[in-house]
Image 1 (cartoon, rainbow, N blue to C red):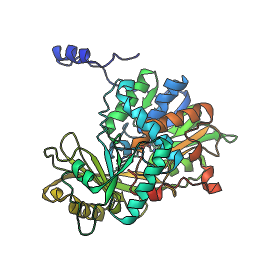
Image 2: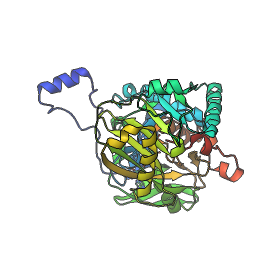
Image 3: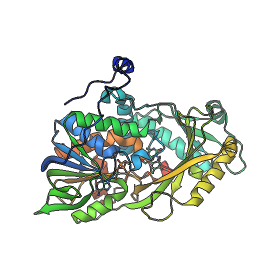
Length: 416
Ligand SMILES: Cc1cc2nc3c(=O)[nH]c(=O)nc-3n(C[C@H](O)[C@H](O)[C@H](O)COP(=O)(O)OP(=O)(O)OC[C@H]3O[C@@H](n4cnc5c(N)ncnc54)[C@H](O)[C@@H]3O)c2cc1C
């Protein structure tokens, strides 16, 4: 069942026979009657959960059920920023675990996820931000996460196209994480999917979960558009639709769903080789391998399920970024898109048991969960397999009852 490894020899062999011998990267089976674990949602987090369930815990009788196509949710719609410079200890632990896994992910999955640790700057454009980022640097250094504060001159060296002296948004320095960067978002989903399929797991696309079946307070299966499927355990990993699925199981989540959007310019020659976030104006910028400038803004100010985002964000964010990066003003914008993100009150995720026995939930990554995919999958797999994960311990649902928030709302700003 396992596929041949991708290698330079395989590429050479296929080049000689007109690439006719490549196998499909993953199987597309019909669902079985029962699985030990069903994961709802074939985004990065759901697929990574399944992958580490098999790889670390030896649980391979697993189905990942997806209502659309795999990676078609937020995983394939984000701006791919990866960093681990969060303020609170539980956040730094899970995001840095993710970053460490990203560093070897292509080798582990035998799939090139194009991880590019090109360096990430979070600009300080007010006194308040400057104090906040210096505090984060101190916290990161205590957590063993290497970040440093850099002054204006070094910012200019790293980002020659930047205008440091904008009248409204002067740059005072930046929080710099050299190990931060980007990866190819859909390759992350495809790589995990191939890894899952190779272990014999079923990825079932175009199959919507329409109901959650319970008996005596315990989950026993799901109803789907391809029929009923029984399961021993259920992992709900559906990002912006988490409250919809929780409602099917009879409990509520402290989640708000909102549209978040991004847009890209026409491709140009390389002008910026780091990732820059300007959180004061809710903007961020990097350049893709194709040459497009990738720009993004904040969430809509109201709850909705439209995968689009409202107009004024594009205008406001682009206008603000132009002041700091005047080069943008000469570019045509090529396309724009949106996703539905799942926001919690403390802007930290939920990896948790639920009131329904054997039903676990992973959500609340909001505007910044792409970077967390490997760490989140690792922790969620451990939680599902063993009922406890040290990395997930701070992110239980009980924190909202007990008031033990993991407050990243100020530190993270735009939390991409
Ligand atoms: C515009 C934008 C920019 C972003 N930028 C960044 C960034 O730069 N860096 C970063 O770290 N994060 C970023 N994010 C956030 C990041 O994309 C998400 O946190 C992350 O992708 C969430 O992954 P996921 O696997 O949880 O969700 P998703 O990828 O959304 O997967 C959930 C899946 O569940 C499926 N599903 C839902 N309901 C059902 C059902 N009933 N039955 C079956 N399947 C169902 C959906 O179809 C979907 O495919 C951004 C998000 C957006 C929208």
